[in-house]
Length: 208
Image 1 (cartoon, helix red, strand yellow):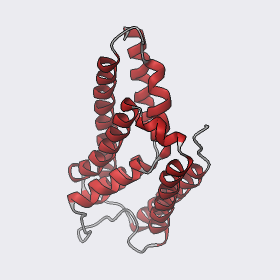
Image 2 (image 1 turned 90 degrees about the vertical axis):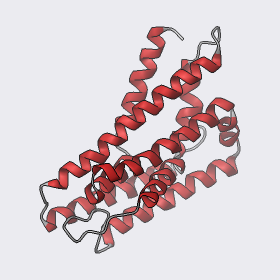
Image 3 (image 1 turned 180 degrees about the horizontal axis):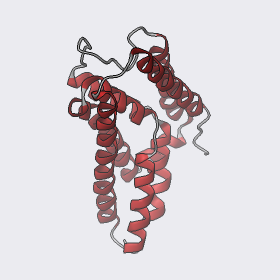
Image 4 (image 1 turned 180 degrees about the vertical axis):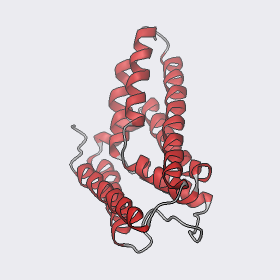
């Protein structure tokens, strides 16, 4: 892989990783509720969801999933339903997605990891990115395995950096204390964003 190709891959992946989406909103809300360090488990769930998609892409399995209308649709609609559920919970639940105060109940590490993992694994856009975009950076005249290893390690590092940042961002926003109406507004905004993400996800197709 040429240096200029790698730098283009690095910048592209960096922008995608830091672009706010359902996973970023979820990790930030976990940071606001549980603290930045605890929310790293949710970030880890997102990262490992991407690791699985990267491996599937590297082995060619991702292309088979995309080619299968049934499998792709299952992934997509599970993701749509889950995002809309989380969005509705944040908007209509009394506790909401973000809880602030001394009496807030913290989530266990495993629950946060699973939540991040499921959200990312049920995101068909992540599957499409790894299956369709990554191959564009490959140099067929050089060993493919080494290039996938380089891109895999880079993606893993950038994912950790991005979602770790969102975890501490959520923590930072609530560390000084937030009034109840602000928390409610944030919950409704986050919930609306999750529902919007779910609706947008419903329009994703393997041909996009």
